[in-house]
Amino acid sequence: MDNEFRKLPSVEAVASDKGLQDYYRVFPRDVVVGAVRKFIAEFKKDIQEGKSAPDRDYIVIKVSEYLSILGSPGPRRVINATGIILHTNLGRAPLSGETIAAMERVSLGYSDLEFNLENGTRGSRQVHIENLLCQVTGAEAGLVVNNNAAAVLLALTALAKRKEVIVSRGQAVEIGGGFRIPDVMRQSGAKLVEVGTTNITNLDDYEQAINSRTVGLLRVHSSNFKIIGFTGEVSLPEMVALAKQKGLMVFDDLGSGCLIDTSVFGLAPEPVVQESVAAGANLIFFSGDKLLGGPQAGVIIGDKILVDKLKKHPLARAVRIDKNRLAGFAATLLHYLKGEALEKIPVWRMIAAGLKGIEVRANRWAEASGGQAQVIDGESMVGGGSLPGGTLPTKLLAFNSEGRGKGALPVQALAVSLRRQEIPVIGRISGNRLLLDPRSVLPEEDEIVIRAIQNSIKGN
Image 1 (tube, rainbow, N blue to C red):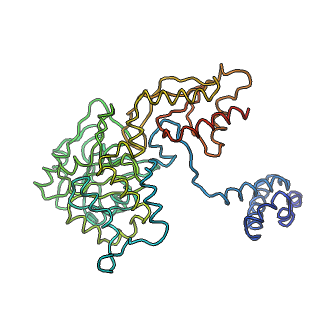
Image 2: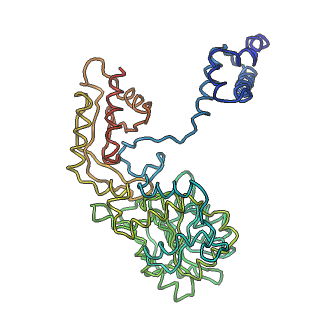
Image 3: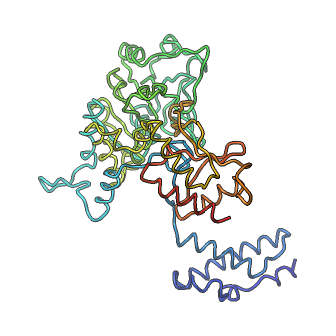
Protein backbone atom coordinates (compact mmCIF):
# COMPACT_ATOMS: atom_id res chain seq x y z
CA MET A 1 0.00 0.00 0.00
CA ASP A 2 2.86 2.39 0.89
CA ASN A 3 4.27 1.81 -2.57
CA GLU A 4 0.96 2.81 -4.16
CA PHE A 5 0.88 6.04 -2.15
CA ARG A 6 4.39 6.85 -3.42
CA LYS A 7 3.20 6.35 -7.00
CA LEU A 8 0.54 9.04 -6.54
CA PRO A 9 1.78 12.36 -8.04
CA SER A 10 1.85 15.50 -5.93
CA VAL A 11 -0.76 18.21 -6.12
CA GLU A 12 1.77 20.59 -7.66
CA ALA A 13 2.84 18.07 -10.29
CA VAL A 14 -0.73 17.60 -11.48
CA ALA A 15 -1.67 21.28 -11.17
CA SER A 16 1.26 22.30 -13.39
CA ASP A 17 0.50 19.72 -16.08
CA LYS A 18 0.07 21.27 -19.54
CA GLY A 19 -3.32 19.55 -19.85
CA LEU A 20 -4.77 21.90 -17.23
CA GLN A 21 -3.18 25.18 -18.28
CA ASP A 22 -6.19 26.40 -20.29
CA TYR A 23 -8.35 26.26 -17.16
CA TYR A 24 -6.20 28.92 -15.45
CA ARG A 25 -7.57 31.39 -18.02
CA VAL A 26 -11.11 30.48 -16.98
CA PHE A 27 -10.89 29.99 -13.21
CA PRO A 28 -8.80 31.50 -10.40
CA ARG A 29 -5.77 29.37 -9.54
CA ASP A 30 -7.22 28.22 -6.22
CA VAL A 31 -10.22 26.67 -8.04
CA VAL A 32 -8.01 24.58 -10.34
CA VAL A 33 -5.64 23.55 -7.55
CA GLY A 34 -8.61 22.82 -5.30
CA ALA A 35 -10.00 20.45 -7.93
CA VAL A 36 -6.66 18.65 -8.11
CA ARG A 37 -6.57 18.29 -4.31
CA LYS A 38 -10.11 16.94 -4.36
CA PHE A 39 -9.27 14.12 -6.77
CA ILE A 40 -5.96 13.22 -5.18
CA ALA A 41 -7.75 12.97 -1.80
CA GLU A 42 -10.30 10.64 -3.38
CA PHE A 43 -7.57 8.48 -4.92
CA LYS A 44 -5.85 8.23 -1.54
CA LYS A 45 -9.07 6.80 -0.12
CA ASP A 46 -9.17 4.33 -3.01
CA ILE A 47 -5.62 3.22 -2.22
CA GLN A 48 -6.57 2.69 1.42
CA GLU A 49 -9.31 0.37 0.17
CA GLY A 50 -6.75 -1.69 -1.75
CA LYS A 51 -6.92 -0.08 -5.19
CA SER A 52 -3.94 0.88 -7.33
CA ALA A 53 -2.72 4.45 -7.73
CA PRO A 54 -3.65 6.14 -11.04
CA ASP A 55 -0.98 7.81 -13.15
CA ARG A 56 -0.77 11.56 -13.62
CA ASP A 57 -2.39 11.52 -17.06
CA TYR A 58 -5.49 9.83 -15.71
CA ILE A 59 -5.79 12.33 -12.84
CA VAL A 60 -5.41 15.23 -15.29
CA ILE A 61 -8.24 13.77 -17.41
CA LYS A 62 -10.54 13.46 -14.39
CA VAL A 63 -9.74 17.00 -13.20
CA SER A 64 -10.24 18.34 -16.73
CA GLU A 65 -13.65 16.64 -17.02
CA TYR A 66 -14.67 18.08 -13.65
CA LEU A 67 -13.59 21.63 -14.54
CA SER A 68 -15.27 21.43 -17.95
CA ILE A 69 -18.58 20.58 -16.29
CA LEU A 70 -18.01 23.24 -13.64
CA GLY A 71 -17.48 25.85 -16.36
CA SER A 72 -20.60 24.85 -18.31
CA PRO A 73 -23.37 24.55 -15.72
CA GLY A 74 -26.57 22.83 -16.80
CA PRO A 75 -29.27 22.04 -17.45
CA ARG A 76 -28.55 22.14 -21.20
CA ARG A 77 -31.09 22.58 -23.92
CA VAL A 78 -31.91 19.31 -25.70
CA ILE A 79 -34.27 18.26 -28.49
CA ASN A 80 -36.87 15.77 -27.28
CA ALA A 81 -37.43 13.32 -30.14
CA THR A 82 -38.56 10.50 -27.84
CA GLY A 83 -42.24 10.96 -28.65
CA ILE A 84 -43.03 11.50 -24.95
CA ILE A 85 -44.47 15.01 -24.93
CA LEU A 86 -44.24 15.65 -21.19
CA HIS A 87 -40.92 13.93 -20.52
CA THR A 88 -40.15 14.36 -16.80
CA ASN A 89 -36.42 13.66 -17.25
CA LEU A 90 -36.23 16.26 -20.03
CA GLY A 91 -37.94 19.06 -18.09
CA ARG A 92 -41.63 18.40 -18.86
CA ALA A 93 -43.46 21.21 -20.66
CA PRO A 94 -41.53 23.45 -23.09
CA LEU A 95 -42.66 27.06 -22.87
CA SER A 96 -44.30 29.37 -25.37
CA GLY A 97 -42.40 32.33 -26.80
CA GLU A 98 -44.61 34.74 -24.88
CA THR A 99 -43.99 32.85 -21.63
CA ILE A 100 -40.23 32.94 -22.14
CA ALA A 101 -40.38 36.66 -23.00
CA ALA A 102 -42.37 37.40 -19.83
CA MET A 103 -39.80 35.57 -17.71
CA GLU A 104 -36.97 37.42 -19.42
CA ARG A 105 -38.61 40.84 -18.91
CA VAL A 106 -39.02 40.34 -15.19
CA SER A 107 -35.40 39.15 -14.91
CA LEU A 108 -33.81 42.16 -16.62
CA GLY A 109 -34.17 44.48 -13.66
CA TYR A 110 -36.49 45.30 -10.80
CA SER A 111 -40.23 44.66 -10.91
CA ASP A 112 -43.43 45.45 -9.02
CA LEU A 113 -43.45 41.89 -7.63
CA GLU A 114 -44.66 42.97 -4.20
CA PHE A 115 -45.19 46.68 -4.73
CA ASN A 116 -48.44 48.54 -5.36
CA LEU A 117 -47.72 51.10 -8.07
CA GLU A 118 -50.96 53.01 -7.38
CA ASN A 119 -50.40 53.90 -3.73
CA GLY A 120 -46.66 53.22 -3.38
CA THR A 121 -47.04 50.62 -0.63
CA ARG A 122 -46.12 46.98 -0.25
CA GLY A 123 -48.32 44.56 -2.21
CA SER A 124 -48.79 40.83 -2.73
CA ARG A 125 -47.21 38.81 -5.53
CA GLN A 126 -50.45 36.87 -5.86
CA VAL A 127 -52.30 39.90 -7.29
CA HIS A 128 -50.42 39.36 -10.55
CA ILE A 129 -51.98 35.94 -11.04
CA GLU A 130 -55.20 35.55 -9.03
CA ASN A 131 -57.58 37.36 -11.38
CA LEU A 132 -56.25 35.39 -14.35
CA LEU A 133 -56.68 32.11 -12.47
CA CYS A 134 -60.25 32.94 -11.51
CA GLN A 135 -61.15 34.11 -15.01
CA VAL A 136 -59.76 30.97 -16.68
CA THR A 137 -61.08 28.40 -14.16
CA GLY A 138 -64.22 30.03 -12.79
CA ALA A 139 -62.97 29.76 -9.20
CA GLU A 140 -63.62 32.35 -6.46
CA ALA A 141 -59.96 32.72 -5.49
CA GLY A 142 -56.53 31.37 -6.30
CA LEU A 143 -52.99 31.01 -5.01
CA VAL A 144 -49.81 29.85 -6.77
CA VAL A 145 -46.94 28.13 -4.97
CA ASN A 146 -43.77 26.24 -5.92
CA ASN A 147 -45.28 22.92 -7.08
CA ASN A 148 -48.35 20.74 -6.62
CA ALA A 149 -46.95 18.76 -3.69
CA ALA A 150 -46.37 22.09 -1.92
CA ALA A 151 -49.94 23.13 -2.69
CA VAL A 152 -51.36 20.00 -1.06
CA LEU A 153 -48.95 20.29 1.87
CA LEU A 154 -49.90 23.94 2.51
CA ALA A 155 -53.63 23.28 2.41
CA LEU A 156 -53.55 20.26 4.70
CA THR A 157 -51.16 21.93 7.14
CA ALA A 158 -53.34 25.02 7.38
CA LEU A 159 -56.73 23.30 7.44
CA ALA A 160 -56.31 19.71 8.62
CA LYS A 161 -53.40 19.55 11.06
CA ARG A 162 -54.11 17.03 13.83
CA LYS A 163 -57.40 16.24 12.09
CA GLU A 164 -58.50 13.44 9.76
CA VAL A 165 -58.88 13.49 5.98
CA ILE A 166 -60.54 10.57 4.20
CA VAL A 167 -59.23 9.22 0.89
CA SER A 168 -60.00 6.17 -1.21
CA ARG A 169 -57.40 3.43 -0.78
CA GLY A 170 -57.05 3.26 -4.57
CA GLN A 171 -56.02 6.92 -4.63
CA ALA A 172 -53.25 6.82 -2.01
CA VAL A 173 -50.76 6.94 -4.88
CA GLU A 174 -47.07 7.48 -5.47
CA ILE A 175 -46.56 10.50 -7.72
CA GLY A 176 -43.07 9.68 -8.97
CA GLY A 177 -39.53 9.95 -7.64
CA GLY A 178 -40.58 7.98 -4.55
CA PHE A 179 -42.97 10.69 -3.33
CA ARG A 180 -46.21 9.27 -1.99
CA ILE A 181 -49.44 11.08 -1.19
CA PRO A 182 -49.61 9.52 2.33
CA ASP A 183 -46.07 10.78 3.03
CA VAL A 184 -46.92 14.32 1.90
CA MET A 185 -50.03 14.27 4.07
CA ARG A 186 -48.10 12.96 7.05
CA GLN A 187 -45.73 15.94 6.86
CA SER A 188 -48.76 18.25 7.13
CA GLY A 189 -49.77 16.75 10.46
CA ALA A 190 -53.06 15.53 9.03
CA LYS A 191 -54.10 11.93 9.56
CA LEU A 192 -54.92 10.05 6.38
CA VAL A 193 -57.84 7.65 6.70
CA GLU A 194 -57.99 5.19 3.80
CA VAL A 195 -61.35 3.66 2.89
CA GLY A 196 -62.61 1.12 0.39
CA THR A 197 -60.36 -1.28 -1.51
CA THR A 198 -57.76 -0.84 -4.21
CA ASN A 199 -60.29 -1.26 -7.01
CA ILE A 200 -63.66 -0.28 -5.49
CA THR A 201 -64.71 2.49 -3.10
CA ASN A 202 -68.36 3.29 -2.39
CA LEU A 203 -70.00 6.39 -0.91
CA ASP A 204 -70.86 4.35 2.20
CA ASP A 205 -67.14 3.77 2.76
CA TYR A 206 -66.62 7.51 3.14
CA GLU A 207 -69.73 8.03 5.25
CA GLN A 208 -68.87 5.26 7.71
CA ALA A 209 -65.36 6.67 8.27
CA ILE A 210 -66.58 10.17 9.19
CA ASN A 211 -66.26 11.10 12.86
CA SER A 212 -65.81 14.19 15.02
CA ARG A 213 -62.14 14.52 13.96
CA THR A 214 -62.87 14.45 10.23
CA VAL A 215 -62.42 17.77 8.41
CA GLY A 216 -62.51 16.75 4.79
CA LEU A 217 -62.67 14.26 1.95
CA LEU A 218 -59.77 14.07 -0.49
CA ARG A 219 -59.91 12.95 -4.11
CA VAL A 220 -56.57 12.22 -5.78
CA HIS A 221 -56.50 11.74 -9.54
CA SER A 222 -54.52 8.61 -10.43
CA SER A 223 -52.69 10.48 -13.17
CA ASN A 224 -49.80 8.06 -13.67
CA PHE A 225 -51.58 4.68 -13.70
CA LYS A 226 -54.89 3.11 -14.63
CA ILE A 227 -56.91 0.33 -12.98
CA ILE A 228 -59.19 -1.52 -15.37
CA GLY A 229 -61.69 -4.33 -14.99
CA PHE A 230 -63.89 -4.67 -11.91
CA THR A 231 -63.63 -1.13 -10.56
CA GLY A 232 -65.76 1.54 -8.96
CA GLU A 233 -65.23 4.97 -7.45
CA VAL A 234 -67.27 7.81 -6.05
CA SER A 235 -67.79 10.80 -8.34
CA LEU A 236 -66.77 14.26 -7.25
CA PRO A 237 -70.38 15.57 -7.19
CA GLU A 238 -71.30 12.68 -4.86
CA MET A 239 -68.38 13.49 -2.57
CA VAL A 240 -69.37 17.17 -2.52
CA ALA A 241 -72.98 16.32 -1.64
CA LEU A 242 -71.87 14.10 1.24
CA ALA A 243 -69.39 16.71 2.50
CA LYS A 244 -72.03 19.44 2.51
CA GLN A 245 -74.40 17.18 4.42
CA LYS A 246 -71.71 16.49 7.04
CA GLY A 247 -70.21 19.99 7.18
CA LEU A 248 -66.86 18.91 5.68
CA MET A 249 -64.50 20.23 3.01
CA VAL A 250 -63.65 18.50 -0.27
CA PHE A 251 -60.07 18.65 -1.52
CA ASP A 252 -59.47 17.68 -5.15
CA ASP A 253 -55.88 16.91 -6.22
CA LEU A 254 -55.97 16.86 -10.03
CA GLY A 255 -52.24 16.46 -10.57
CA SER A 256 -51.65 17.58 -14.13
CA GLY A 257 -53.98 20.58 -14.30
CA CYS A 258 -55.75 20.14 -17.61
CA LEU A 259 -57.82 23.07 -18.92
CA ILE A 260 -58.76 21.56 -22.31
CA ASP A 261 -60.87 18.49 -23.15
CA THR A 262 -58.35 15.82 -24.18
CA SER A 263 -60.99 13.56 -25.74
CA VAL A 264 -61.21 15.97 -28.70
CA PHE A 265 -57.81 14.62 -29.78
CA GLY A 266 -58.72 10.96 -29.43
CA LEU A 267 -57.21 10.67 -25.95
CA ALA A 268 -58.87 9.40 -22.82
CA PRO A 269 -60.68 12.14 -20.86
CA GLU A 270 -58.44 13.85 -18.32
CA PRO A 271 -60.16 15.63 -15.40
CA VAL A 272 -60.65 19.26 -16.38
CA VAL A 273 -60.09 21.93 -13.74
CA GLN A 274 -63.24 23.85 -14.66
CA GLU A 275 -65.35 20.74 -14.06
CA SER A 276 -64.01 20.41 -10.51
CA VAL A 277 -64.88 24.04 -9.85
CA ALA A 278 -68.40 23.51 -11.20
CA ALA A 279 -68.81 20.35 -9.09
CA GLY A 280 -68.23 22.39 -5.94
CA ALA A 281 -64.86 21.16 -4.62
CA ASN A 282 -63.74 23.53 -1.88
CA LEU A 283 -60.06 23.48 -2.84
CA ILE A 284 -58.52 22.18 -6.06
CA PHE A 285 -54.81 21.52 -6.59
CA PHE A 286 -52.89 21.06 -9.85
CA SER A 287 -49.52 21.55 -11.54
CA GLY A 288 -48.46 24.30 -13.90
CA ASP A 289 -45.77 22.42 -15.86
CA LYS A 290 -47.72 19.42 -17.14
CA LEU A 291 -50.80 19.60 -19.35
CA LEU A 292 -51.25 23.24 -18.48
CA GLY A 293 -48.02 23.84 -20.38
CA GLY A 294 -46.32 26.47 -18.22
CA PRO A 295 -43.33 26.69 -15.85
CA GLN A 296 -43.20 24.63 -12.67
CA ALA A 297 -45.91 25.78 -10.28
CA GLY A 298 -48.49 24.44 -7.88
CA VAL A 299 -51.96 25.97 -8.06
CA ILE A 300 -54.64 26.18 -5.39
CA ILE A 301 -58.08 27.46 -6.38
CA GLY A 302 -61.45 27.35 -4.67
CA ASP A 303 -63.44 29.01 -1.90
CA LYS A 304 -62.16 32.50 -1.14
CA ILE A 305 -62.46 32.08 2.62
CA LEU A 306 -60.17 29.03 2.50
CA VAL A 307 -57.68 30.44 -0.01
CA ASP A 308 -57.35 33.58 2.13
CA LYS A 309 -56.47 31.39 5.14
CA LEU A 310 -53.73 29.69 3.14
CA LYS A 311 -52.27 33.02 2.02
CA LYS A 312 -51.81 34.03 5.65
CA HIS A 313 -50.30 30.76 6.83
CA PRO A 314 -46.54 30.87 7.65
CA LEU A 315 -45.85 27.92 5.35
CA ALA A 316 -47.10 29.96 2.38
CA ARG A 317 -43.88 31.97 2.47
CA ALA A 318 -41.74 28.83 2.48
CA VAL A 319 -43.43 27.43 -0.64
CA ARG A 320 -44.07 30.67 -2.53
CA ILE A 321 -43.35 30.92 -6.24
CA ASP A 322 -40.49 33.10 -7.50
CA LYS A 323 -40.90 36.15 -9.76
CA ASN A 324 -39.68 34.46 -12.96
CA ARG A 325 -42.09 31.54 -12.85
CA LEU A 326 -44.91 33.78 -11.65
CA ALA A 327 -44.49 35.98 -14.73
CA GLY A 328 -44.23 32.94 -17.00
CA PHE A 329 -47.26 31.26 -15.50
CA ALA A 330 -49.34 34.41 -15.96
CA ALA A 331 -48.31 34.58 -19.63
CA THR A 332 -49.28 30.93 -20.09
CA LEU A 333 -52.71 31.47 -18.52
CA LEU A 334 -53.23 34.42 -20.83
CA HIS A 335 -53.04 32.04 -23.81
CA TYR A 336 -56.07 30.19 -22.43
CA LEU A 337 -57.95 33.40 -21.75
CA LYS A 338 -57.34 34.54 -25.34
CA GLY A 339 -58.37 31.16 -26.76
CA GLU A 340 -54.97 30.60 -28.37
CA ALA A 341 -53.60 27.70 -26.31
CA LEU A 342 -53.61 25.23 -29.22
CA GLU A 343 -51.63 27.64 -31.39
CA LYS A 344 -49.22 29.01 -28.78
CA ILE A 345 -48.54 26.47 -26.01
CA PRO A 346 -46.01 23.86 -27.21
CA VAL A 347 -47.60 20.93 -25.35
CA TRP A 348 -50.94 21.56 -27.04
CA ARG A 349 -49.34 22.27 -30.40
CA MET A 350 -47.77 18.82 -30.19
CA ILE A 351 -50.97 17.10 -29.06
CA ALA A 352 -53.02 18.83 -31.77
CA ALA A 353 -50.49 18.26 -34.57
CA GLY A 354 -52.00 16.49 -37.60
CA LEU A 355 -50.60 13.17 -38.80
CA LYS A 356 -50.06 14.40 -42.37
CA GLY A 357 -47.88 17.28 -41.21
CA ILE A 358 -45.87 14.95 -38.99
CA GLU A 359 -45.33 12.58 -41.95
CA VAL A 360 -44.01 15.42 -44.13
CA ARG A 361 -41.50 16.36 -41.44
CA ALA A 362 -40.47 12.73 -40.86
CA ASN A 363 -39.79 12.36 -44.59
CA ARG A 364 -37.50 15.42 -44.50
CA TRP A 365 -35.59 13.82 -41.63
CA ALA A 366 -35.34 10.59 -43.63
CA GLU A 367 -33.85 12.45 -46.60
CA ALA A 368 -31.21 13.89 -44.29
CA SER A 369 -30.22 10.35 -43.28
CA GLY A 370 -29.14 9.57 -46.84
CA GLY A 371 -31.22 6.42 -46.97
CA GLN A 372 -30.06 5.05 -43.62
CA ALA A 373 -33.50 5.44 -42.02
CA GLN A 374 -37.10 4.91 -43.02
CA VAL A 375 -40.43 6.40 -41.94
CA ILE A 376 -42.74 4.00 -40.10
CA ASP A 377 -46.03 4.19 -38.20
CA GLY A 378 -45.83 4.67 -34.46
CA GLU A 379 -47.39 6.04 -31.29
CA SER A 380 -46.55 9.12 -29.21
CA MET A 381 -47.28 9.37 -25.49
CA VAL A 382 -48.36 12.40 -23.49
CA GLY A 383 -46.36 11.29 -20.41
CA GLY A 384 -45.43 13.40 -17.38
CA GLY A 385 -47.86 11.59 -15.11
CA SER A 386 -50.77 12.42 -17.41
CA LEU A 387 -53.14 10.21 -19.41
CA PRO A 388 -51.65 6.81 -18.48
CA GLY A 389 -51.74 4.54 -21.51
CA GLY A 390 -52.98 7.36 -23.75
CA THR A 391 -51.24 7.50 -27.13
CA LEU A 392 -51.46 9.51 -30.35
CA PRO A 393 -50.70 8.15 -33.84
CA THR A 394 -47.45 9.43 -35.28
CA LYS A 395 -44.79 8.82 -37.92
CA LEU A 396 -41.34 7.78 -36.71
CA LEU A 397 -37.91 7.97 -38.26
CA ALA A 398 -36.45 4.49 -37.69
CA PHE A 399 -32.77 3.54 -37.87
CA ASN A 400 -32.36 -0.26 -37.94
CA SER A 401 -29.30 -2.14 -36.71
CA GLU A 402 -29.27 -4.12 -39.95
CA GLY A 403 -29.66 -3.02 -43.53
CA ARG A 404 -28.13 0.45 -43.13
CA GLY A 405 -25.16 -0.11 -45.37
CA LYS A 406 -21.50 -0.87 -44.84
CA GLY A 407 -19.82 1.28 -42.19
CA ALA A 408 -23.08 2.54 -40.68
CA LEU A 409 -23.04 3.19 -36.96
CA PRO A 410 -24.88 0.67 -34.76
CA VAL A 411 -28.05 2.26 -33.39
CA GLN A 412 -26.62 2.45 -29.85
CA ALA A 413 -23.59 4.36 -31.14
CA LEU A 414 -25.81 6.57 -33.30
CA ALA A 415 -27.94 7.42 -30.26
CA VAL A 416 -24.78 8.40 -28.37
CA SER A 417 -23.58 10.50 -31.30
CA LEU A 418 -26.91 12.36 -31.44
CA ARG A 419 -26.66 13.07 -27.71
CA ARG A 420 -23.17 14.50 -28.18
CA GLN A 421 -24.23 17.16 -30.69
CA GLU A 422 -23.97 20.85 -29.78
CA ILE A 423 -27.70 20.70 -29.09
CA PRO A 424 -28.25 17.05 -28.09
CA VAL A 425 -31.05 15.13 -29.81
CA ILE A 426 -32.67 12.47 -27.62
CA GLY A 427 -34.46 9.56 -29.27
CA ARG A 428 -35.64 6.20 -27.96
CA ILE A 429 -34.38 2.71 -28.68
CA SER A 430 -36.92 -0.05 -29.19
CA GLY A 431 -35.55 -3.51 -29.91
CA ASN A 432 -32.87 -3.06 -32.57
CA ARG A 433 -34.14 0.31 -33.79
CA LEU A 434 -33.43 3.92 -32.89
CA LEU A 435 -36.65 5.92 -33.21
CA LEU A 436 -37.04 9.70 -33.59
CA ASP A 437 -40.55 11.14 -33.28
CA PRO A 438 -41.36 14.55 -34.85
CA ARG A 439 -44.49 14.99 -32.70
CA SER A 440 -42.47 15.90 -29.60
CA VAL A 441 -40.21 18.22 -31.61
CA LEU A 442 -41.46 21.69 -32.54
CA PRO A 443 -41.38 22.36 -36.33
CA GLU A 444 -39.00 25.27 -35.77
CA GLU A 445 -36.49 22.77 -34.32
CA ASP A 446 -36.42 20.56 -37.43
CA GLU A 447 -33.23 22.09 -38.83
CA ILE A 448 -31.41 21.27 -35.59
CA VAL A 449 -32.52 17.63 -35.86
CA ILE A 450 -31.52 17.43 -39.53
CA ARG A 451 -28.03 18.83 -38.84
CA ALA A 452 -27.63 16.44 -35.89
CA ILE A 453 -28.59 13.45 -38.06
CA GLN A 454 -26.18 14.48 -40.82
CA ASN A 455 -23.33 15.22 -38.41
CA SER A 456 -23.80 11.91 -36.60
CA ILE A 457 -23.80 9.90 -39.83
CA LYS A 458 -20.76 11.76 -41.20
CA GLY A 459 -18.97 11.14 -37.92
CA ASN A 460 -18.59 7.43 -38.76
